Image (cartoon, rainbow, N blue to C red; front, side, top):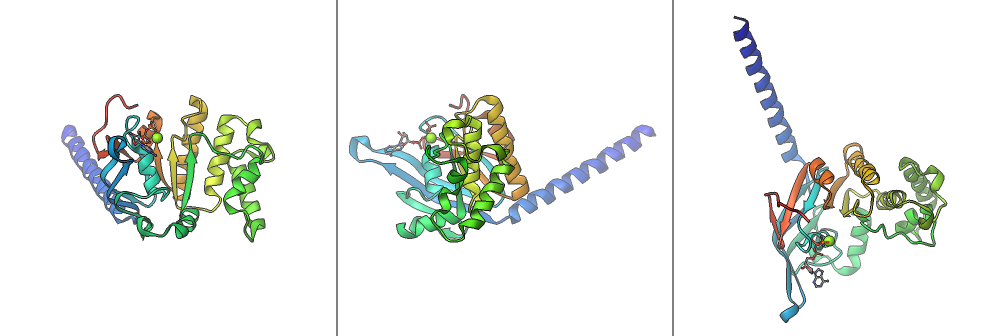
Length: 260
Ligand SMILES: Nc1ncnc2c1ncn2[C@@H]1O[C@H](COP(=O)(O)OP(=O)(O)OP(=O)(O)O)[C@@H](O)[C@H]1O
Ligand SMILES: [Mg+2]
């Protein structure tokens, strides 16, 4: 008798779990697409130096997703990120960012789109060595009017990153993790919806890397930022909502063994 009741409870619980999963899946489907590629290919060079770096890549990233892009060295990860970030043009295919086809926008308008919609984080931070942390965070907005407002925002962001006491330090006076946090703050200064990161933990020790990962997840959960992160870091891959695998310029859903 007791066993029967238990079984009923289990069945009921299972159906509740199923229901929740269906609801979550439906909610995910309803989310707006924010980064889309259609058959994107990229060929570098000509003749004997010709490299087919991306081959007909189709991608649909929804707003608020946290995505890891994995694959061996040379598989096209950075090339893909350059296409998504409108830093380079595909040889064929189309790239959409927030509904705008960036692959067909003239070069002189791309800058504006990148500036307003995207934040970039790189492995080697790319901070300007002669500028303070605060000035580095302000780099993307200078020189513009209303920089007072940005100045306050930059301060707020650096405080949020735990760098209150480091605002006037130059990059050379900061640890790797601190420099990367400055770079994250710089990526956020114009409040972009999408953050593209290329090996953001690549230069960091394990503990500092973990802090950056935590920070990115926080920005994803609490601020709704969409993250697309190229990485060899298992911790990012394991904690991502979705992992994409590149091999020889092709996207696959199947994990690649011996990544790296
Ligand atoms: N500017 C370029 N000109 C010519 N070939 C290039 C160029 N950039 C990349 N490639 C080639 O395209 C392929 C993909 O390069 P990509 O930089 O996207 O790889 P990756 O997956 O980011 O590798 P890694 O993990 O080493 O950073 C490689 O074979 C590379 O040699
Ligand atoms: Mg790369």
